[in-house]
Length: 82
Image 1 (tube, rainbow, N blue to C red):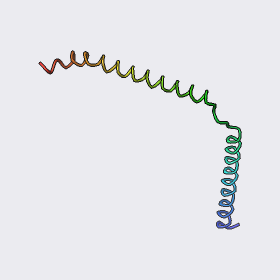
Image 2: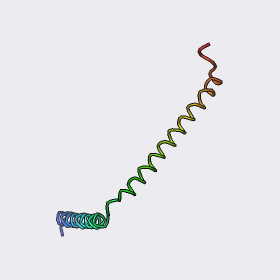
Image 3: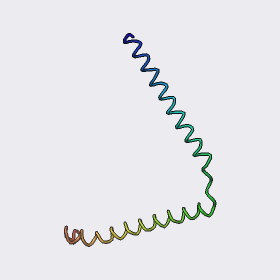
Image 4: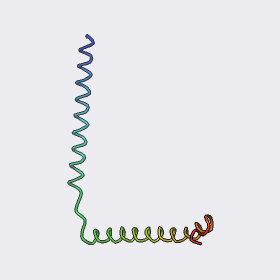
């Protein structure tokens, strides 16, 4: 067997392996999409409420940190408006 035949055989093997992996992935995705279902309105609104609550809480925490940093900044740097 020559070197060229070895390279061709290896390329064919790699191509077949890639094709098999792609078909496996496609099959898995097809099964996933067939099993998945659309969320109900109740589940959708519940998820939306939880996300909005999280955004509000994170905003309040950020606001409190900003408010707390103003006096600390004035102590460290000193009053600049005086």
